[in-house]
Length: 94
Image 1 (cartoon, helix red, strand yellow):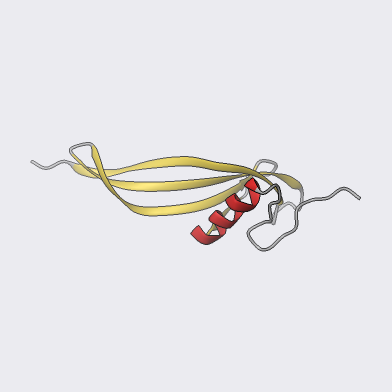
Image 2: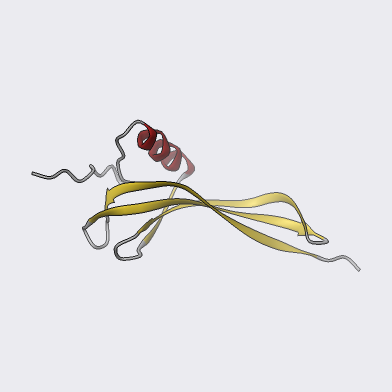
């Protein structure tokens, strides 16, 4: 008898301040990476699905982003300036 299945892992990569596409509020967004791995006898062997998402902490809206966009957001976050998935500018007080 062979026992196989999948197991999911969730990694939080960064917290960014972006303008939400759904509610329009400038709020913190969590940049997350979801990895699903194939398991054999409860041992994770290899990943077969990787997805990147941002989630608004104000309204809870979740938006999927590409790997390149996630890497760009992480790089800009370390540089002190972050832009949203659709090229949005960060919130600035008048």
